[in-house]
Every structure is written in C-alpha cells, then in structure tokens.
View 1 (cartoon, rainbow over the protein chains, first blue to last red):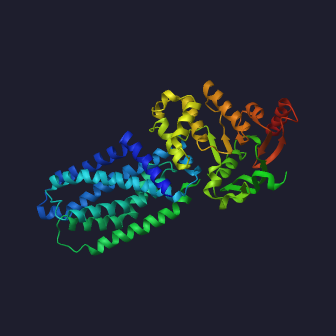
View 2: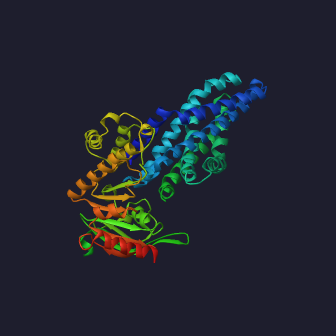
View 3: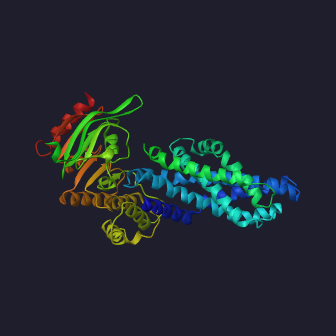
Length: 221
Length: 238
C-alpha cells in the first residue's frame, strides 16, 4: 500500500514539474477570480474580512477543478489507466497517492495566492497563521478527496471537463462553507470557528474513507 | 488436459455489457509454457477474455484460476505474474523512458530496479533515448519502450492484445526476439490478433472465438496454415 501511494505521488509530481499544467491553469484562473472581485467590489476593511474568505475559497475551488480535471486526464493518454488497472497493488493506494498529489497542488497554489489576496483586499493573513494553514490543509483535503474520486469517474465520460464540476461542486458545498467560515476567523474575524473546524475534520474523514473504499470499483472497466 | 496441470484456466466464464454478452460460459485451459493464439472477428470476446484474465475487468461470472488460485481471491503475487502488451503503450508521455520504467518497476516491486531498468533499455536498443520524454519518440520507439515496460517485472504469463499493430520494422524485430526468448524460457503466452499468419507462426494452439465461445481449435503441429485459413474464412463468412 505504502509503495503504491509514494510511487503514484512521485509520478504525478514528476509529471507536474515537467509540464506545470495543473499549477499553471489553476493559478492563473484563481488569480483572475481574485482580481475581478477586487476591481468590481470596493470593500471596507471590515467587509473585506467577512467576504474575503468567501472570494478566496471561490477562487481556490474553481482553480482546484482545473487541476483535478488534469489529474486523470493524464491517465487517459496512451490508456495509462489500463496500466493502473493491471498493477498488483491495492487500488486504494493508487487513490491515496493521487489524492495526496492533488492536495499538494492545491496547497502550493493557495500559499502563493495568499499574499496576493492580502494585497488585493488589504487583509492581514498573519492574524492567526497556524490556524489559517490548518484550515487550508483541511479544506484542500476535503475538496481533493471527493475531487480525485469524481475525476476518475469523469475521465470515462465524453464531456469530462463539464461533468467534473457538475458532480464535484454540489458535494463539496459543506466543506467550502466550513472552510470559508473557519478562514474568516483565521483572518481575524470575531467568530466562533469550533463547529466549522469540526465539520472540516468530519467531512475529510468520511470522504477520504468512502473514496478509498470505492475507488477500486470506479477504476475497473 | 487436467485442470490441475493448467497454469491458466477458466470455467463457465460469462461477461455481459448491458444486453450484449461478450463471453458465454467459456471454459478454456492453458498449460504452463503454451503459446495460445486467439483469433476471431471484432466483438467475438477476445479482448474481453484478456481483460478478465489480466484483472482489468473484475466483474464477471464463472471462475478464472492462475496457478490454481482463483483470480477473484488472488493476492498481488498472482497478478505480478502477468505481463500485458497492447497496441497502446500505457506510457506517460511527459515522463522520460527511464522514469516510465522506474514507475512500473516500483509499482511491481521489482528487486534491484535500477539494474533491471538499464538492462531493459539496452534490450530494446534505446540507450541513447533513456532521458528523452516519451512524447518525443516515434511510434515504433514507444512500442519498444512498451515492451520493456511489459517485461520489466519478468512475468511468467504474457498477454498480448493486437501487439503487431503500428509496429515499425525494428520494433517488430525486437517483439519477435522478446517473444522467442520468452517462449524458450518456458513462459506462457496468450495472444489476441487479427494477423492470423503471425499468430499461427507463434502459436502451439490456435482457437477461434465467435460470439463469446470457442468454435474451432487447432494446432500448427497437426495442420497447415492454408487449411486453417480456409476453415477460419468459412467460420467468419458462412
């Protein structure tokens, strides 16, 4: 299992370092969303604190969809997905390796976008930095856990680029709402984040487990 | 042939896709070291048979046994015995030749993987291309890398799905050499092909699939290719 996870992760990172396609598409799209919100809305600092977290996660989610679409698209070329089906490894390990790679891609994009977000919206991202990092991590795990599974489903369909967001965004609404609320607290809002933080953890545990257990059925023809 | 001596055995294997039945209660035994060629028209169930035996398709009725172990309950060691060559390379086009082989070697748990990768690159005569990304290779070169991929874990059963499609002369020559060495080493070979002449030459036994069943079986040792071709055309066109 561990061998499958690390090898899939190594392979996906290596391909991304070679092509930079997932990061490039995700970063540019997320940045565009933030720039458009920044220029269309003239927010006070108090409003920016409340609404900024929402804008931030909208940009992460839209950019994340592009990166997730790429995740299994690279398995489609030359029918590499058949190579995965043949392998003498637990298919759950393949899922975890791909999910981990997607979490890393999302986190890298998020961490690069955060300082730009702070400049655009005049928000202090160092108010509760460890808490902010924890929320980014939990939110990315939740989004990627479902996204990796749905990306594997969508790759077998003809309209795969359209199918993924249609499947993914409704299912990830709970994790996005929880991430927005918890991020607002991390940016300095005077709210109680404990419920949202617990929701993020529960969502992650449930969806990572369910996706891990069902991935074998999704991967087979 | 008794069931105990077969390396690969299917019993009442049936597979349907919706209303279409690809395999109908197919029972076939393949002893260790045999080269079996499967021919038949499109949709006869040939590729479905290979996909089930290789664990690509895991939902079917009936039994598949490899070395006496039922494939549905099999461990990773049983699946590690299988190598698969298809007309598609199963290679990542953005990875180099060496990285592609390293990926497959690690996933199959190949011991002393680095040495094995160097050896396989040498055997397919691509030492000069080992650090080139696969997308920059010609189709023939990709197929040579694909052969190295299929043999990297030293399988004892080799499944080939239309292996001659799109091969250039050099790749074709290397494939013939690999298959010859594999047979000499006692490997078991199951090949699906429309190229009946090449399939005949490589086979110890040839079976014809039609509507998910074996409708004809012969051996190159017992009959000539011309006799087989006449019979094959009769099955296909009558």
